[in-house]
Every structure is written in structure tokens, then in C-alpha cells.
Amino acid sequence: MTTGQIVAIVVLVVLVLAAVVALAVFRRRSTAQRQIDATRYREEAASRAASADRLEAEAAERAERARREQEQAAELAEMARRDRELAEKRTAQAKKLEPDPDVVERS
Image (cartoon, rainbow, N blue to C red; front, side):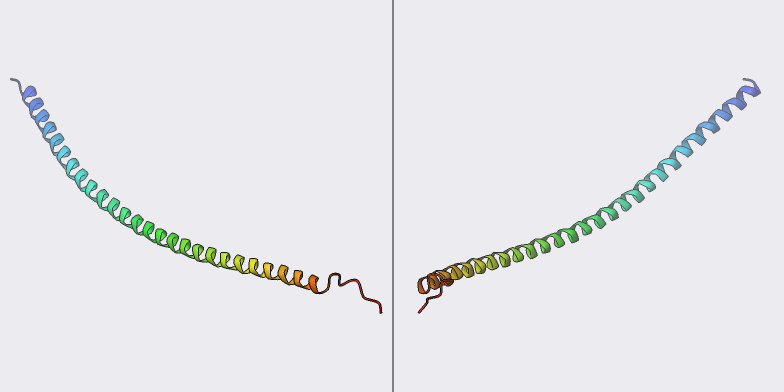
């Protein structure tokens, strides 16, 4: 073997070792980066879950408020219906007592 071949083999071995070391460092960094990403994703998921819980609670509160308002509106409608019936009844009673209020009796 010539000196050039020996140098070429040594350079090749050094390059292969450098590639292996670089790959190991990259994988270690990649694992660390994945752990960082996973932690960030977990934190984001927890934040979004908390936000979803708050929104769900607000929606339930609004639905309850709307239900109460609907009940109040139904009560008001029932009161209006009774008042209307009473008004119609009173009008009918007034007509029985005085059939035509516009006609004035002449004596």
C-alpha cells in the first residue's frame, strides 16, 4: 500500500467517524427537541382545555339565564291573556248594563 492509499483510508475513517458523531448529536438534539415540543403541546392542550371549560361554563350560565327569561316571558304572556279575558268580560258586562253608550236617552 502506498502512502497516498493509507492517507485516503485514514481520511475516510475520520469522515465516517465524524458522520457517526454528527448523527448521534443530531439524534440527541432531535430527542431533546421532541421532548420540548411535547411539553409545549401538553401546555397548549391544558390551556385550551381550561379555555374550553370556561366557555362551556359560560354557555351553561347563558342557557340557564335564557331559560329563566323564557319562563318569565311565559308568565307575562299568561298574565296578559288573563287581563285580556277580564277586559273582554268587563266589556260584555258593560254592554249588558248599557247596550249603546253613544245613544243618550231623551226624556
